[in-house]
Length: 380
Image 1 (tube, rainbow, N blue to C red):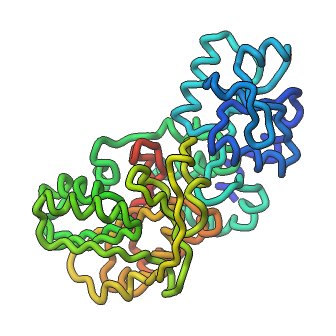
Image 2 (tube, rainbow, N blue to C red; image 1 turned 180 degrees about the horizontal axis):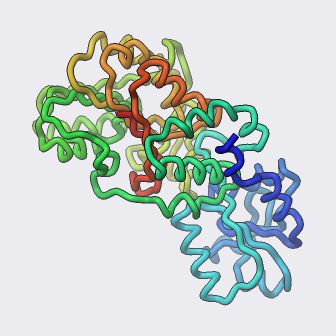
């Protein structure tokens, strides 16, 4: 298949790393801990963490000693550095190493998932080959196809450097693209309303003219903040619901920071300490509670006219779309979502949506949202 031939051989990539001696991980944060776990499963055993915070030197993290860069260079003549943190921090580290004249091999290797500890495998690429080829062929332009290849390479190697070069957008974030037609009578369904920030950006996108906004946010601290935003803006025809959404109605564990200070990473999969991308687990004050999740089809009985459905729900995007099948069939909304956030559903997304509407057009864009470069799927 054309698409598979263009994907990096992930096995060969890690075989190359495995051949180096004195492998160390630069970045002793949450992502570093997660990445070390994955590397050990692949029979790659780092000798230490290197970290820029000298207060951590001499300590232990994830079963490895934490040292400074100077100690690394004094202890070993030959070594291999794996930068194990989110790309913005990784780029700073890489630039710093270049300034210091680092000649030993340096790789970007960071867990590319928030709700899983894994790298995509070649076996998965082959298993989902037909669906991934359908996804590749369904893309409307070359940019989308190139982003898809770089996206798969990132998920398989942990190296985001090729993908991040496609980053675009502005302060409108999800709405900072010409792919979205502008009208003044949209119904905006905001799944994962967070603190109301996306509602504000939607209002800027549509010039403050819309038909209705229906927003869902199950995180109590986030929902409270979103209410303040709506009240401060004196917004009309806005309905904010504290409901978690899924593919069916059931009881699930909901993990959240729960302190009104750390708003990110609430999810239905695992402890927030494992989804936050930086080292702030202590500040997070993680809570877990049972909630009854429901389907979008049950929550919204009918939807008429033009609609935009934005789904940003930390790896729950596709299950939520499964629970919105009737709504999507009846209304044919524009859909905005982060692509491939959970490996199990990655290959299913576009084949599923094509079955609902064969005339949907699919675009991938690498957008700057929430202080991060994210792969966004636009379905129009």
